[in-house]
Image 1 (cartoon, one colour):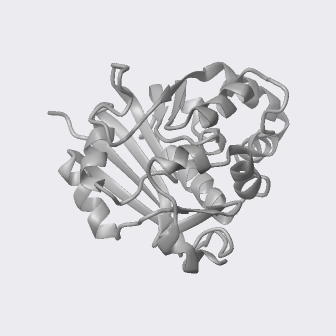
Image 2 (cartoon, rainbow, N blue to C red):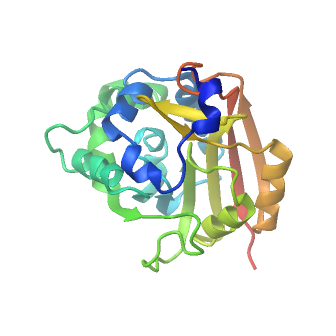
Length: 256
């Protein structure tokens, strides 16, 4: 069954907890780097060179079981916090941080980032630094006005959401996410374009994308400005997802 044909019966909502296979997801999407991941890393590197983004604390909302997209960000922050709706995804990140047997091997990601920064021989030091900066793996739900409920956290310098947010209730979700940012902090979103479903094993999960203009409106509605939009033509593979490309948004929370 192809992705397009399965869109109407794709899984969403509460069934995600039961049907999402963490190990198979990592195998399908991260054993070999997909073009979307290359776009995200290279575009983040470009944005970071501007010196706009950095600070003490970064939070990734909806991390899934992956740290891959944050290696490039790690040297710009002192603390890296992650979060996900499901315990098994949070446990996958904890296992890697604590060096437990059976954790996913992210060495190739650290090697790629170290090479991109001209420090190819120092990839192991980059990995150790990243581990030391990893702090909490929060439960999260972006539909909640406080996505980290019941935790009341002080605001973060940067909040990221990478291949996670869907179109449903998007204006409300962006406002909820923005509430976790300090004034002057940055929101970074990376997601697929014109996607309605993606596959993990034999299970099809729903994924709904907005158009660029709708995203921009939702960001402004949430009190964000200095909005930059980056778009890649790379597709993520027709046998796994029906997206037509990938985008990145960088925006700053206005001071009240």
